Length: 472
Ligand SMILES: Cc1cc2nc3c(=O)[nH]c(=O)nc-3n(C[C@H](O)[C@H](O)[C@H](O)COP(=O)(O)OP(=O)(O)OC[C@H]3O[C@@H](n4cnc5c(N)ncnc54)[C@H](O)[C@@H]3O)c2cc1C
Image 1 (cartoon, rainbow, N blue to C red):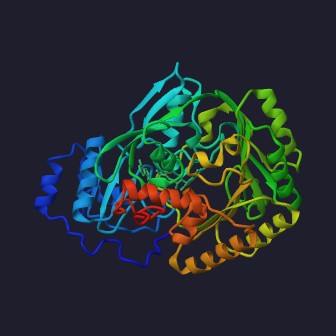
Image 2: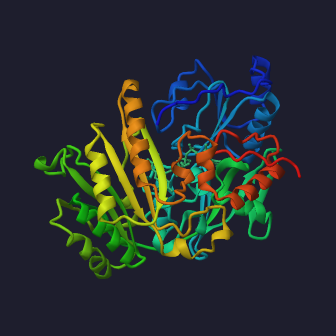
Image 3: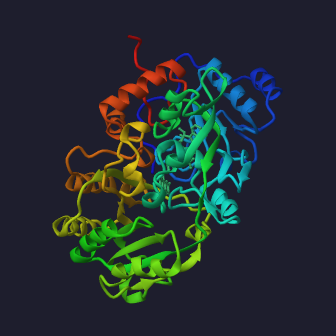
């Protein structure tokens, strides 16, 4: 992703932080303060995606809810833009700010597992990988996404679509309660009985309503899975049949299929490098033999180019990552109903028409447990959508960017079906119209009303923003 904001982020009334203000503030917080000129400033201001070269006035590595309340107070009183960061994977670069304050949760990683009761209280600075490794030590899981370094803060508040989506639903479907510091600095416990409106809103409404200090999740018993990477040749027949098989598969099986150019990686045979492939990640959340049976139809679609699907402990779905990897990319997210042979052909034609070093159409077949949760019970609005598609092109220089943007936008337009729709977790900085696509009007209006009550001045605005409704 890359910075393409046109507007100055600070409010006209913002007051710069002088030395006295910083000194006074530092006496009130336990966490570390990092400022321009500090040794670790450059590392502390960077986020997962490259291309966001923003320079915050202050980064606070908060330690507890009290610190969070203080940072919120500082932002409120100074008028400075507030960036809230958990794992720093915001596709839109919302985890950093030019001239504002970053509330960095990455040191809040406490995890209390109630193994008997099958629940966990997790501080929001944990990553999906850290939480998963700790829970798996007891044969337990909560589903997050496909990448271990994603923060549980951002993914939970957006919804959470991952390898257990068909078996156990979205991440928010396992959210029992949360603690949140709101714009007035107050710490609230929210669940189905206490502040039910806020509990509804944070399950899909993103970071609009406050800073979540910790979440209480439900845990499921999943020990060994059958999973891993299956690479197939990308033909229209293989793509369409893959989608059909993924829809027909038992709910234990969730898949993420990347139609892309084969990278020159050691596990991919040299003669396939540069050709179009389906690089699929599959997870069968259950016993070995049933898993092998569920995966057999996919293996039968064509002679696999790579088959690394095997019984494994669940946390192996999150392999080690390179911390220095900061890609720049343009992407577009949507929900669609069907991928038949013709649409698969369209996918392949668009992928062939670009020369981006890495370009991809990612297909996630949904359904199962996610679709059974009543649509109105959370702010996540696409329960009945059958397929999520993300198209993306990576680029290396700003000169390339316009061409990649044009390609992504044509490709997305060619795939769009009906209303479209968008997953808030994969939206870039694309404007209010696209944020509205994440929420149908009735949900948008309800979120805007809750926003008016909990954050009337739109303090939490550096996000996929839902502005407060004007008072009736
Ligand atoms: C490589 C990659 C893979 C991904 N895979 C998946 C996937 O498989 N499934 C999926 O559903 N999504 C996926 N995503 C999208 C991801 O869920 C969102 O980008 C999410 O917002 C990232 O969370 P974060 O905490 O890492 O990001 P951050 O940049 O730290 O946070 C993103 C935003 O969330 C809000 N936020 C974060 N923490 C808090 C908090 N504690 N309180 C209040 N607001 C908060 C803020 O508004 C912030 O701007 C992926 C993203 C990337 C980059």
